[in-house]
Length: 233
Image 1 (tube, rainbow, N blue to C red):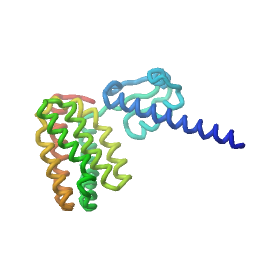
Image 2 (cartoon, rainbow, N blue to C red):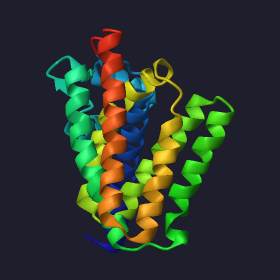
Image 3 (cartoon, rainbow, N blue to C red):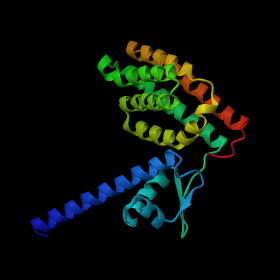
Image 4 (cartoon, rainbow, N blue to C red):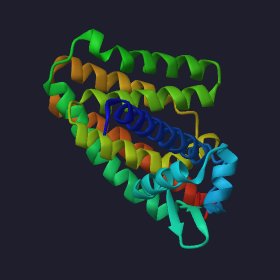
């Protein structure tokens, strides 16, 4: 293969990778935003037409989303968005609580400086502002940023990958139940407690604070699913 052919091949491969990433991000966002609702089913070609893409990058994106537990692929019937039921959410939060509590411990052990923790501090500040303005969507976005920052800063890439995947699986349920819960005033206070423990390097307190924070949120969410008899999300 001559140099020009090699360059063309590399550019093609790079373009393909970019299209797959675009397809993955767009389909995933439609799922998380409930545009592709739980149980939604579509042929591969229909998804491709919706995105304005060819089938090849869409197929690869759907395979990736299947591995993340967001869709299932059905032969000759395309893809189906996997619904979440109350038992699923219980399992999701059990895993997420364990992973994020370990992330809190790891981050505290690393004794991060104030600059490193600024994304978490800023997210907590934005949560408080959103509550004063009764903007639950802004609150949820800031809360999501806080937890993603915690994971990203912990220093364990495998843990981060697993935690982000599990959190995405439960995202739809959290958003659907957001307005069925009491005003989430406790979360920002618990985030402040966690930040204080991390800044002090108190890894045991950081782990325990975050564990109870996630357990409380899990109980609230699963109670709502059962109270309102929501069969799936």
